[in-house]
Amino acid sequence: HWLLLLPCPTSSLLSANVPQRSFGIDYDCNCFVKDGSPFRYISGSIHYSRIPRYYWKDRLVKMKMAGLDAIQMYVPWNYHEPRPGVYDFSGDRDLEYFLQLAHETGLLVILRAGPYICAEWDMGGLPAWLLEKESIVLRSSDLDYLAAVGKWMSVLLPKMTRYLYQKGGPIIMVQVENEYGSYFACDYDYLRFLQKLFRQYLGDEVVLFTTDGASKSHLRCGALQGLYATVDFAPGVNVTAAFLTQRASEPTGPLVNSEFYTGWLDHWGHRHSVVPAQAIAKTLNEILARGANVNLYMFIGGTNFGYWNGANMPYLPQPTSYDYDAPLSEAGDLTEKYFALREVIGMVSILRTCLGYNSSLFFFNFSFVCFCLLFCFFFFF
Picture (cartoon, rainbow, N blue to C red):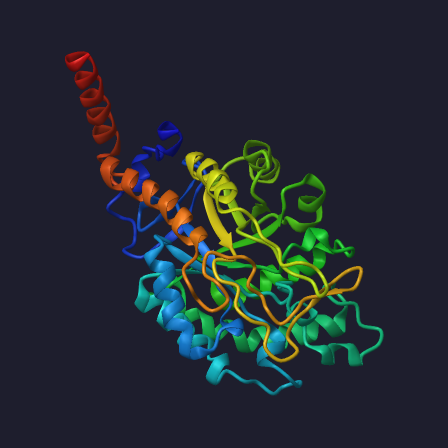
């Protein structure tokens, strides 16, 4: 497994001309590159809209102490624009303050900006007032829908630019839409519209990506050239086969599971979903052994306050709790799963430190360690 973690020894990665703060993709290396060095992230999902502001720092610190490099977060459009042209970024909706806390905690941010987010959230984050136009076709190139999206993004994305990694902030990647390959419309013009919109406000340096289920049928409508395609899958699946599906859309570049499920959602009238910690730890170890990037969804679930809970089809509503059987409970408590996953993540961190994963001396260190192990084996045995 160690050999699968070897970074690409491309001399360009070690060039002194690389800017001090940069984040991108090296397709020859099959990895991300952060500040000129190979980089692999282990992140966890947290939804600020499901946690009171008072507890944000507590949850972020606990995520950092689990060994995570980054957090992944959605921005629910309807949470910030309750009525057309009326915006709320105060109190529990203070998105910028949440980003600042993540940055201060030492966590990078993977931003899932929508406009549709799913997340078992009311209307997947789309404002209900969009439906006042009876003919509107959501998540498509319908002109009324695009006009509303364009207006919202003209408010949201400019706020995000100062938090991009290249500008000194924590945001390393931005997701466009969400699991669009699972939607019936399959409208490439819509995805192209979003891509152009995001580039207009965020620039050309930021990594834009998509997330879809690990199947060719999902990636057929969810992937678009110019947006890096990632996949999501659950514990217990064939990890190699899942990543081979990503390779069908992205022949080279980093392997990424953007939603590795640590638990599962609940429905009214059903038993609380529970997924064994050891099953998750086992598959997480397999993912990391392949040198892949992974986001743990959810790392903390939180609570659906008010009427923000969503529903699946056929109509299965979510309850108030979004505990998700996550490593951090709904109340923010450390669970058995938290410690099991922290142990797996910790082993990877030790390997990085001992073998110099992000340094130009990696191969020397690795060879030296192998030599020492062989010497000890023959000397003592």
